[in-house]
Length: 278
Ligand SMILES: Cc1ncc(C[n+]2csc(CCOP(=O)(O)OP(=O)(O)O)c2C)c(N)n1
Ligand SMILES: [Mg+2]
Image 1 (tube, rainbow, N blue to C red):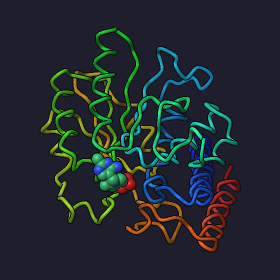
Image 2: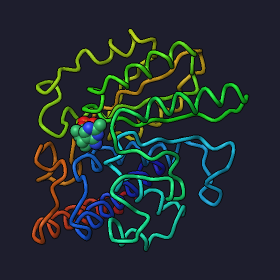
Image 3: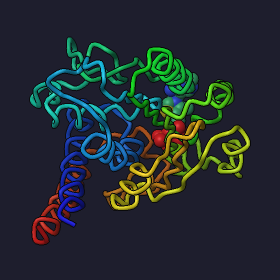
Image 4: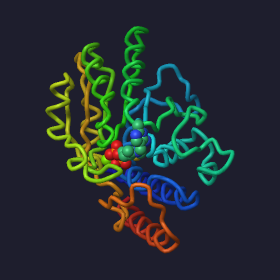
């Protein structure tokens, strides 16, 4: 229980970072970062083998943020873990900063440049295959958006991953049912998504992408058995801030002064509640 409260606290703090970064920069992808932050927190604080003091450690697990537009969530976690100084978050998207609006390998801890959707899984397949050939024990985690699955290249990568029996590859879909221009089922129907991944040879687990207990269980129990794994994480876009949750126009909307104040107040109230339980 203590562990879960700790993760919840970390995730609320990260949501504050996300909102601050976007408000300061007057740019960013608010909904998608708030949607996936609980997943990224679970992976980085609890599941993956990493060493922030040694980002290139040979045996580290690899993480690829294929939905690169959710970069604020990623930077916030990397900074909190000490991959780079936290003060740098204040320069997010400012001239000369390495913290650009989509992740690049200039940032300690970032494995792959992303942002053009549909490529992360294919790169993950390559890294996972290399790990098998080199007889290394690392695992590769690739976080994708659900709208991103409209890209055909995702499915080419899915097919070849099963062909090579890449059981060291874990795909995660941030299933928030929204993409840039509307509901995923209205823009280009994805369902039945679970069955599609299964048909491509993947073992699929479904999970609530805001429930740390469930996520820890699912990610810890992923077996090594000659199939790649897909975690279908049900989420709410904009999760954690009342007037952003589930709202399509918050895909890359920036909070104004009033919205910023309300958002921070709501997150501070959540922090207080978690604090009372610790
Ligand atoms: C190849 C490519 N086409 C279009 C875009 C523009 N774009 C950025 S985010 C986005 C929507 C992605 O939706 P989803 O994957 O569901 O992300 P989330 O809901 O998690 O924010 C689009 C179309 C892009 N980044 N890359
Ligand atoms: Mg989406």
